[in-house]
Amino acid sequence: MIHFSQESALSKRAKADVCLIPFYEGKKGAECACKLTTQLQAGIKSALSSGDFTGEASQTLVLYLSGQPEKRAVLVGLGKEKELTVEVLRRAYSTSAKLCHKLKIKAANALLPTSESLSTEEISRGLSEGLLLSNYAFDKLKTSKTSSQQLLQKVALIGDGKEALKSAKEALHICQGVYFARDLVNGNADDVTPEHIGDMAKEIAKKHSTVKTQVFSKSKIEKEKMGLLLAVSRGSHIDPSFVICEYKGDPKSNDTTVVVGKGVTYDTGGLNLKPTGSMETMKADMGGAATALGTLHAVASLKLPCNLTIVIPTTENSISAKSYKPGDVYKSYQGQTVEIGNTDAEGRLILADALSWASKNLKPTRIIDFATLTGAIVIALGNEAIGLMSNDEKLASDLQKAGNDSYERACQLPVYEEYRQQLNSDVADIKNIGGRAGGSITAAVFLKEFVGKGIPWAHFDIAASAYLDKAIRYNPQHGTGIGVRLMLSYLKNHVCK
Ligand code: BES
Ligand code: ZN
Ligand code: ZN
Image (cartoon, rainbow, N blue to C red; front, side, top):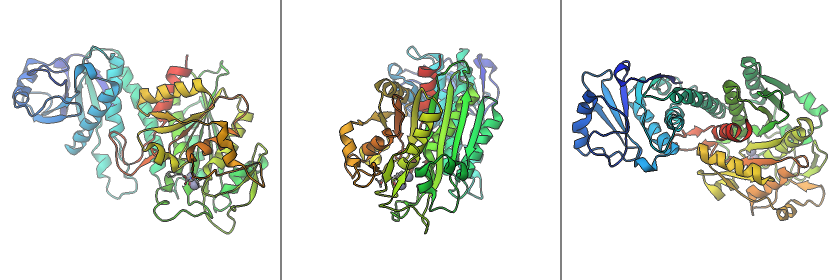
């Protein structure tokens, strides 16, 4: 966690371990992207004239100062001034944060860049998100806590602009939602159980009077006749849960966004058991649930003026004598019968019951689901874009804009009705697999059947990016919390008035 403060006068800045000084590429001498005192200019002059630092985006250079509130400075390259974007800032300050960790820096003075194209709000958002998203470590399962001990603790924003601190604090709330999601994904599957997911939802409700949580136990799920969630859960010795968490930030309005998250706390594949090499990361199969909870966490702490309900069907997909069986037919909450073509296509089953339960009981204005749903999306898009499928063009286009704004970019795939025949079953109303062709799309086509008539719905397949083998820029190795920032941007810019 970073504590942010602001000081408008450069000469009044407090002591810190480092001064982060932004530079644009191609500027001569000590002409940097912010105001500098003459002493500071003198301090960095020789480093600049050496030519070791050009100001190229995300380039950094450490140099040592004397007679300054900081014993060192880090020059931060922002690339060409005309090409500055929020994302350039995120990347540059993410690199700077990682350098600070190496140098065991706890407190930084960050001189705010000035820009002709970006507003103070955008500059501060990019800078703060870059620092915050990289300032994360998960060492709960390690004996030595060295990585979390190296994190930055204090950042003073130095420069004018009232918006800067406000926007940094907003970024902090959003990134705390991201951390919340990452922690859940990174936790042991034996700890992050369906019961634990319910407990986390209750924790959020305890902190915010605007949030109400309900957790359906197995017996309630039976009473509700969620036959698909029950089928998937049969192989496990632990019970499934169905979590509903309601945030009312605009009680007078009927507009309600429902976010559904896939909460498979461990996916063995069931009787269609996954092979070695495909199972090891499957504690992350509740990534959608983590995104939903992280979003709620951030929305509630920012007190956004909109209504959000999250719905999480959660279970293990385990294997035992009681496991649900390939070839058998189970009845969904909505009434359709489903032939199980493959027990490893379990995510769409539990989501189907959740989507129809939400459609029937929550009067949703729109439903958005997040799910680590298909290996096919990894093949189709890699991890630079998440899959977006929808029955509503306006919703899809707003979500895509939010994806660009947060740089959690989404690529839309079609859900043409012609794909539906791939799911035809000889014995039931529908089958849960549609063959290899268009695997991510047929999964979405399956889901679509369970969304209430006339409800705008969008589905995000985050199988490729909820959990990473290797860090990418400010996304750390393992749980990323992807989707939280996208949803915050969507709700703020397209839903809240
Ligand atoms: N949880 C997996 C999808 C997944 C794969 C997530 C890789 C993260 C990384 C899902 O439940 C699954 O197993 N899907 C099957 C569907 C198939 C049987 C139709 C898949 O994608 O192979
Ligand atoms: Zn599976
Ligand atoms: Zn799964």
